[in-house]
Length: 409
Image (cartoon, rainbow, N blue to C red; front, top):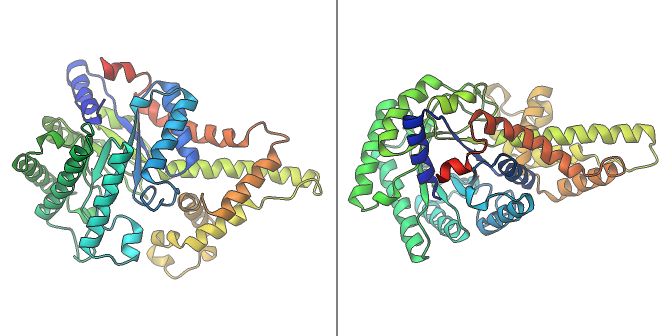
């Protein structure tokens, strides 16, 4: 089943049967998060989207260490392990566009270089079996301020056209698309710009004979970002009548820790991305395990060699320097250890996803698990269950429980 078909089904269920459903897109920022999400999907008989950014999964392995094919292989493995309905687990690209991979900015790639790299990644994702591509050419490092809507549309159409040509060349079935951005730099946050973007996009799809690639999702600003947690139901309700006639729905990003997740489906949202929250859940589960390890050490200091897991994790996050992009104006120039304890922990929770695969972190985690196995049957399962509980909150709020058969009617 295509995601586009599921979105059309959600619209019909809402308008004809007053059923309110919103799809969940989990950002697979670690193997434990991916495993937990598949387990939740299996336990709830629900569909699940897995929205991987170019930073997470790409031809160079990203920070997860996975190429697109390896990511889909991991998804297949966990689907078999948990007896999930693999056809209802959808690997997706999140934020596919120029300079949206950090390395492209660090390497100072030209527009032509970064655009070509994104196209190569899209081809690899199609070959791997991705089912949805978020086309997001709203960043241009050579231009100050938001891009003109017409330029965003033109570049969106160029990437969709490339993806469709590659899909046909590879002999693959139709896939689904997501367009737009929630970021101010995209220039689409203003409601009039949003309307104009839709008008020009659909006109462009028709002019290029790409009607079958009409998007399933249109991303929009609905109140949430990395530092806010309140979903603006009123704004979302105003967007629904703009996109539903196109047989598409709005998708929200930065839905982490949202205060009112139940309002998503009530407002007619089609989907929501959640990522850093699940990294934080993994972090918190490991915190709980290290406290258990500390108790063992206090009881018998000679019995085990402490893993010093969080020392290694902190060092890896610090050395990555990726936490610096979240510094507030008054924090600029400070070292990680000079931030307040609360801000240090936030940086570690949010930045841990970048270094879960760092060799020293992997080794310390293995030592932590080994130290705990005499008193815990499976420390890894403990972590997965902790993350699964965080994911399950959204499955319940979005009314996804036992919906697979509903989508297949």
